[in-house]
Length: 525
Image 1 (cartoon, rainbow, N blue to C red):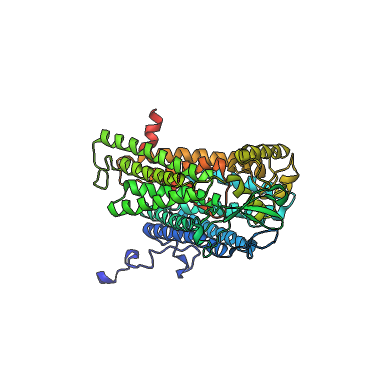
Image 2 (cartoon, helix red, strand yellow; image 1 turned 90 degrees about the horizontal axis):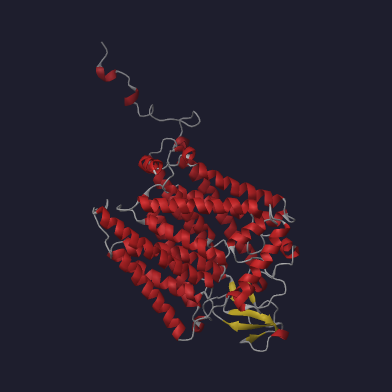
């Protein structure tokens, strides 16, 4: 009789438990043998790496900025600006591509169930419509890689969607929070740099592309704070942080401010103190950008967060139960949001009272397009109060010339030759820009993504009532505020990836499919 201990058992052979992707016994099969916790850690760690990679990639671009006060035509110069912008785009696309691979790992490990997320086809529609517009563009190369320092061609759109994929892999609440906190740190660092840029006395030591803003050609300018041989400029010291423009900084601050405010409302004592300080810093930087969308974004965040905090407090009181974390928040979130609102208002009031408040939308737009990129036509600043209607009207005329598939991503030359011609290369309405470059087809898919995400965000916020995970409120606020300020802003390499990341994190809550109890409740209505 054979000994009991000698009996072969597959359960006792640890090698027999391992599955192989390609029939090999090597370590290359680590993915399929990875535990759920291991997959979540992989996704979480990579998300932070991707966020930091894109954020840090803009620093060389910032360091290369320089202000020259000679008689040159372009007073504002950036050493190898186009090359460095291409570097940012390359790293963005690389991070997004690897993010898609991590997304596939999450699918293999059932962290994401594609079959239960049929709305993902909308992103396929976004890509396909963008590809059609690219192939039909007058300049396919520009449509694919993007124009000069903008670098927002088809390949960049792939990078944006890659960041969505990164966000959707964050199915673990701990890693969602860490990714959100990383964005807060990035926003705070940019805000601090923006504040320093806005101080004239520091201009000698801190490079600022928007220290002086283009007014008009010298023949049309009677008064300016600086003249060169060709044009007049006003001293402004508009903040752009480590991003490519004050408008991009405003978009980034909108997202980071929302997440910081959420931490201030629902975090522990130390977290509340630190994030309240971060909110104050970002509110000040938003005002220092001297742009309308930056201030609008902060205002929408405060209003939305206040409403959600009240709703949450009422629901919590009605439930009369403690949260899963063993803690009731009570009125604290409402009071913290109010406190951050008061601080933000006080900062604005202080800047306004000292006569240092400026709104320089048009000057910054023309400095960005005409001086930095050299792609504005008939550059001037004659309609400071009406710049948005003017640009939107020109964009609408351009859209009418190619309504179905658009002129192609970043095809400014085509935009200028279409209709009445566009004065600069953007309409400063992200949705209209999408329609102009990718047509009604591209706009339809993008709008569908926005609408579906808004519904998901609202549903997730309702689902998290009475639970310890309060990040959903911050995500909802960040998403909504960005979507609102986008009516007066443009997409950019330095800010838009974070918006797609937020969209992805919102979708991550339903990555494995909607909870069964929620589906039943929906069917009963």
